[in-house]
Each structure stands twice: as C-alpha cells, then as structure tokens.
Image (cartoon, rainbow, N blue to C red; front, side):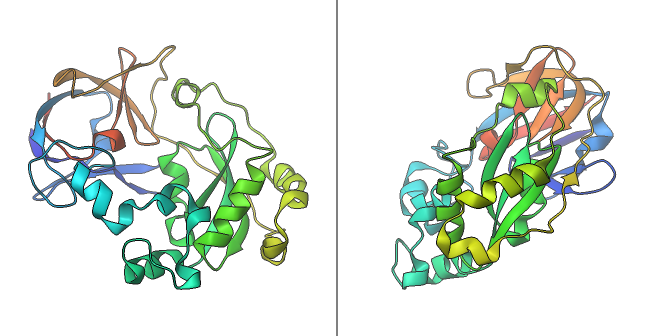
Length: 264
C-alpha cells in the first residue's frame, strides 16, 4: 500500500493512547496502524505549504519568500512577547494578527524531558503538549491575549527551561514530577499584569504515546541528505516516528517535503 503527498505535521487525537494521522490531499493514514510494520519513505520534491510552488523549503514548511512575507511567519509567533495586536499595531497583517493574538492563550508547564514553560492558544490544548512529546502537563495561567502570555513566559524562563531535550524524550529518559507543586512555586514570579489569571486549581494531564520500544540511542533521518529510508516503525511520540534501528524522523521538520510512503 502506498501514499503520496506533501508532509505536514501529524494530526493527533487524545485518547487512552494518542492517535496519529498523516493527512494528504487525497488520502490519510492512521499511523498507529503502521506500528511493527516496515515503512519506506521516498523524498520526491519540495512543495511550499504557503504558496504551493515547487520551491525549496526554507523553514516551517514554506519557501523563503513566504517565510519573509506571510503573517503567520511573523517573529511574534516564536516570541509572543512581541505581539502588538492588542495595541492595534500591525506587523504584517493586522486583521490576521488580531484574529490569532486576541484570543485566550495559556502558559503551561510540560514534562517531555525536563519541565519546560511554554505558550499556546487555549484552542491548541492538548495538541501542543502532544506535539512536544509531553507525558504530563499543566496550565499555569489563562490570559486574554498572546502578549500577556508572552511576558509571562519570559518571566518564568528565568527559572525554568523553555526547551525540550528531544533525545531524552525519545529514549524515554524521563521523570514523573509534581507539576502542580512546581506551578505553585512559579506563582511568585508571575508578572503583576497576570496575577489575576493564575489557575490555582488546574490539574495535571497525563499523556500516553503509542511506542512499542524506545531506542537506547537516536540517529536522525534528514530526507534532504538521505532521500530514501525504510525500517520497522516501533513508535510515535511528539512529531517523531521511531524506528527499530534507532532512526527517528521528525515529521514537522519535513513539512513541505513531497514524499511517497510505502507499507510492506
């Protein structure tokens, strides 16, 4: 059985074990059903997920022009403290920026490899946590716009990491922690503007990923350098496919890659 199309990050569904889907223009694949089967990945060409042109992907699945021009690629996406729609100030497209920035956002703690602080739109919970491979996560504050979430994250980054150690996450070198206690300890560092938005009664969510075997060591598959690979799929975590030989494939990093997938 074969599938062909442009890769985008896997869609997920929270269940007893997270369900993963690769969505293509004409078809879709429930990736969980491929566990313990041999999967071949063949890179065909690039296709920008922004303009649709067959141009080399620069970052985030888009070509250089789209990265520099499209509103969803603005710096405020990565650095939410730079959001200015609440001030009626435009970066690239004020209408788009208001739509995204002026909605409820959550600052959270997630444990993927260590406790990290992060920001996401409320509507993206728990998707954001799943994408990061977090086996446990908790909300800290819920604020009405992206800017307030951004300054909260900046404040908490003085005391917590904002990065995930992907190798530890994929080898399952993890610890179960009391995130509610850590959340309570972080309250003292919240900016004055968000103190009233603190979620004192939020509860920790535990997430189980479909992994049959974790690798002792990881090696990464880069389709730009190795356009063909095949191996037995042993797990899915975050946005990674984990193979029997220790190879791991970051689907999200390969957005904009047109591929052929073959199940054997």
